[in-house]
Image (cartoon, rainbow, N blue to C red; front, side, top):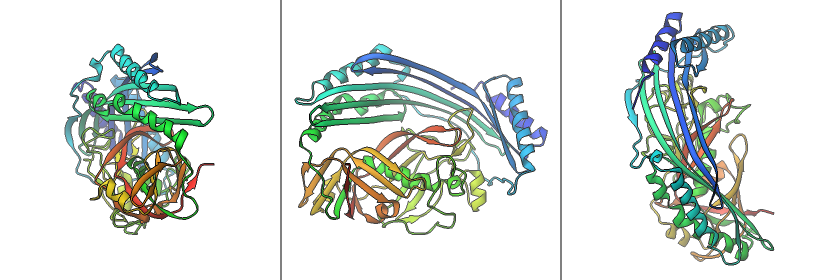
Length: 481
């Protein structure tokens, strides 16, 4: 790893203090990306992008000022410090509640995510050939249905940072990532169409492409989509039933109905006009939100994860955060400002997308804690119900309370056995009802990749969300009209 801009970052911190800042922070941040895109096995595009610069935050008179520059000279960085200081000083006169930061034991460390096989060493031709091979197998997988399109992309990125602040932090990091996303459309013109968008992403190298094995599983998925179109029947909607919810949906639900409403800045109203509000109020820690089975954890430290980091962008050491613990609202996601407001410690949730972005409170890898059952045991415990394995659409309100998930692959359960496919089941549920209705979870823990959006200007950061399969009791299903 090369840290050629470390001296520049440290000099920026010292200069801000010399101006009279009570706190100063500087971050060198580089993100380099590349990727190939194909449609039906044919090459359609090559992406290469590069963002690099230095971000500066200063605290003056109870106000934070932020500025950034992509001019990596002392003159450029000095100008950014001057701008951040001027902004903070001007706003300090308007602060009804001066900003203070929590006292933390900050890190001085270097770390990186390891690559077993460097993605940069794999040629564009090899990546396109892989996509073409997937198309070859997918396009011939069906008998009645037609695979109309398969759009596919293989991408890679490297994120490098040097973070320093006047409280003693000095963190150097390098995190390479790889990703695959695809959109496949399967159609029987007289019967209907199924569309599936899915993405894989992780920190590490090209070894993940082999582990994901899209070539191995996607032809089988396409056959299932054909069966959904031809065979699936309406789900039971005449009365409440038991529902086994697949890990893919569980992961999305915990991200949206636990992770986002647990962000302390959202709880304080900072995101109200941007990403929305939270049903959680500042005094709700310790209140019950679900059954004792319901524990949701956000953990940045998982090796290989898409949201991997060991220190946040304020230099705070990362750790697992137990947001809901055995059905109780346990802790919020904090940076140093919100930790001071709530009288607690930061749990290292400050992340920035790039050098032009300020660190704000973000999730990393959010998941529902697995239980001790098997999937078969969950299903065996259902006399009459539905197993919803995957989803094709979803939405949730601004307070993260009322939500709706439209199922893709789903099966009727009768007397503890999977029966025929059901079409378009809808799980329409509140956050409390979901977590309160869970009576069992299996041992399986699967993660799914995403880019989480938040902030104004919008920031997108890499995350994982996941969980086991879980069983809900007495749920009223609906159906997509």
